[in-house]
Structures are given as structure tokens and as C-alpha cells.
Image 1 (tube, rainbow, N blue to C red):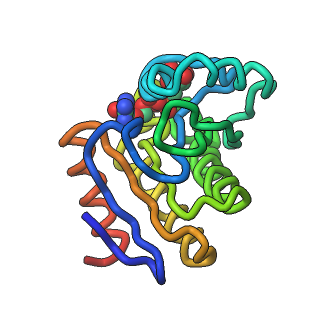
Image 2: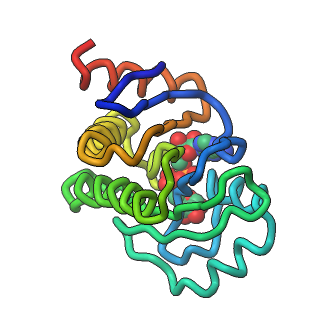
Length: 178
Ligand code: AR6
């Protein structure tokens, strides 16, 4: 699925984000920035051990924020490590923290002259965020940002499995009124 947002493109795709050939891929990290499971483990595995060495020097990252490293063995030049919230019941500030994590990642992309960026569905795995709610927040934040920042030419949103892809495609169509 591919939609135009101003002069930019937002593409939904199914696959493994570590294989994306974009300027920056986003990692769904935790506050330690020292690795974990899910997409974080896949990215560390694919990028190689120099990534962990660089992460050790970053001093962690607060929930709702993001930090950038090199991409090492990945095709992507950079990895933007964004920390989404652990979902509790949705009344603990989770929506704002999730939106902040996406926005912080996009701001780092702009600051580092990344015209293309790929996101995973932050917080929807181990952190337990209900996928449909998380998708709404993710797409609203991305669409608002890209409309105001035409330097981001391509956002690829990479879903790991068919179910996740279908949920996200439905939510994006609703948001865009299609
Ligand atoms: N490519 C794209 N998406 C993926 C991949 C992949 N290779 N692998 C998993 N996903 P998660 P979180 C999807 O759990 O919920 C880690 O331990 C997955 O299906 O990776 O933000 C960190 O260190 C799900 O939809 O991240 C943190 O401690 C989405 O990516 C914690 O998990 C996010 O799932 C972060 O939890």
C-alpha cells in the first residue's frame, strides 16, 4: 500500500526491517539501548557487534525519545533507536509517549539529512500496545510531520506479518478517508 502525503510517499510493506535500503531504519528499543528481543535483537544481529559498542556510549534513552547511531553492516546508513512506552491500560500517558517516540525519530531523521526512513510498529510486540490504537497514533504522527517537513521524501512502515499488515492498512485507509 502506497499513499502520497504532499510531495512525499508513505508505503506500507510486509517484511524484515533489517533488510530495508533506506537512509535510516528505526529500532523499537528500550531505555537501556543495550539490546533486547523482537526487532531490537534482529537489528543488533544484522548490524553486528559494533552497534552495541556505540550504544554503550549513549547513556540510555528516555521513553518517548530517540537516539541515532551508525548502521554498520546494514544497508541503512543510520539506526534511530526510539523508545516507545510499555502499555499498561492506556491511561498512563501511553498515547502521548508513543507519539513522542515517532516524532523524535522523525526529527532525528531531518537533522541528519535522511530523506528516507523505515519504521517498525513500535511498542506493539513485547511492550504490549494494542495494534490498532498504536497504528492510529503512528500514522497521525507520521502524516502530520511529513506534511510539514518535505525533506522526508519516503517513509516505509514495515510490518512483520500479514495480520499486522492488514490491521495497519485498514487504519491508514480510515485516517486518509479512503
Ligand atoms: N522487522 C519488522 N518488524 C519486526 C521485526 C523485524 N525484523 N521483528 C519484530 N517485529 P518488539 P516493542 C515487529 O517486541 O513492543 C525488545 O526487547 C513485531 O512483530 O520488537 O516496542 C526491546 O529491547 C512488533 O509488531 O518491540 C524492548 O525491550 C513490532 O516489531 C522491547 O522489546 C515491535 O515489537 C520493545 O518492545
